[in-house]
Length: 197
Image (cartoon, rainbow, N blue to C red; front, side):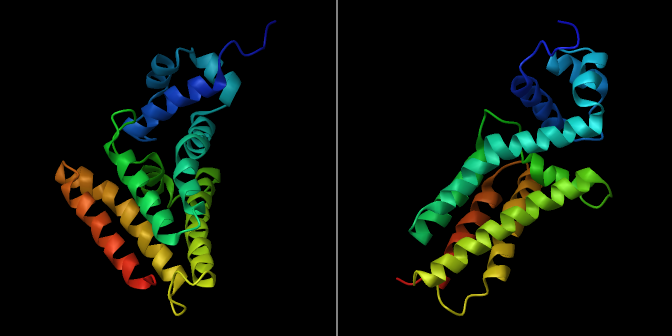
């Protein structure tokens, strides 16, 4: 029996993810993680090898448990409904009492995105995957006659990403979500200008 995990990995990843989400990667200590995860230092190292690897696993956990749900809304065949649902889910995530304030993926991009190594690669992959998914959905909307044919999908997808990531900083900086909500409303109005009635 020795050497076998005696814990639910998804559960401890969720606990660790919330600590990183609240405090950031650099500010989170091993003691913080031990307390939150209910594991001692040797168990954490045996299971995850390092704080860096654990953080990477937490980012992947966030992607599979939270971000994928938002991305799946883009599959709706009506482009307006797809984008509206996507933006609503992002906004709801900012206001949820079930998760820490902000967005761990955005915080990771700010904190480790400019560095080197597998964490930076992981953050870049997450951002690029989201950009590509939004751009692909916009191209599909052009094919379906729901989006104007001359739409620059790459630029419009980048705008969606910039607003969604920027809202995190805006909400934190102002101490409320009023300006963030207005940003999403304006983004929706801009997207409507590109759609066919």
